[in-house]
Image 1 (cartoon, one colour):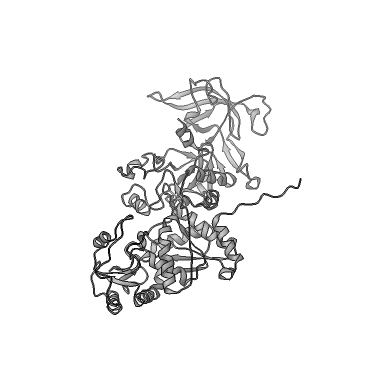
Image 2 (cartoon, rainbow, N blue to C red):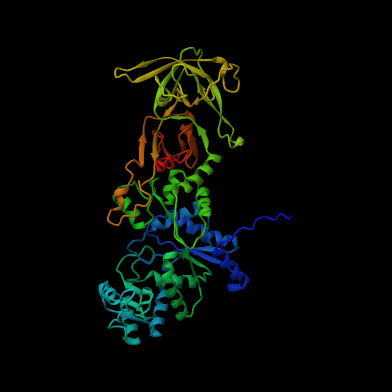
Length: 556
């Protein structure tokens, strides 16, 4: 029997592009775009869109444009523009051209006047409430505006005067003249332009009318000759208007395709809700390590490769679903396990004195990463006094406890086997010092003692440094904070989503820790240096634990 290689299945977007190329559509050219609105920071949901648009273009020797949908000057800012560009580059992608919807304001205005000239758009004086009232319901047709039959000449004059700032904000809008009985509510004379007196981050005060997203989006795609306009499923009802505008204007026929957006448990993806968390100080900012923003994940220590891998694993679908955040954390662990330097950190230290240790101390060798031999080794100072985790010693341990206790020998990692002798307590009975003896012939790598132990404890030398350790957990305590419409989503915030430890003692090598570098703290998880660090005070963020601790919680 002939054995063949398995055929890699293609998602529906790949099939569409390959069919277009085979048919010679657009001369076989592939040009996608990523069109964020600069009104907030990108989150993990945007990462999926980035990976799809840039990934497909790369796969088929095409290009991707970065276009900022800056049609609402009230909510947009240059700060967001710069953060978006930083995030895309951090993920490992680059764009062919950088554009803004505002680049096309003159052209879009001309397009609007063309629609008016063809009798396909009109200026309406109704208020937003009146327009909504006349729009009907999904089962009942809407009613025409009393201004729907204005003449072309009157509409052109009114639209020009709207542009010239003669009318107050909210007093007039430009609407497409389509069909008030359409079963698609988006086709019932949708708004194309509104009056808005606000300073724009690029065009300043040149314009006081701004195109609606549905009008700017398709036409911007067409101007750039985008071949495959890929967006999320909520834009399916908008596609007929996208196609209608392109058809009536007789411009380049860009085509919209929709995929399921990324929904993930234990977080929120709405920019409005994320902004609430920031403005109400539930988090420290857009880049708070608990946020689902890419800047937050970068600060938390997530490698960009792990995010791209995560997006690849969840794939491209046509139906909405909720992805378990555990899959993202798995991808992060898989990546960091290969690259992170192993170090020893004690979170709740207790002093350990080796009573029979003589001399001034020695240097022991420790491997930096057992998964990567090229990472080499480092030296750790060892002497009469070291520190171990308080929980690694018990006077009266339960059955199955194999750490340090009376009558139970343990190994100090990279060092020697030790045995308990006695301890010292303070006035409140708290253990302040543990005395042990060590076996000189049990040194790691040179052990001739024949002593068998079941546990190796991590430790830090007397010369250990102090640091602030920020332990992060999931921001919400329920899988779907949006599920209860009668309860404010903020009621589900995890009060223990950040715990700060200021007692921790770390290997001295971490004094020279690098930003952007990951470290595995033995038995604790993966950590990285935070931007709040200074020469006087180091701060480390927990990226992810060594295991999925939430899996056990959910099984209870």
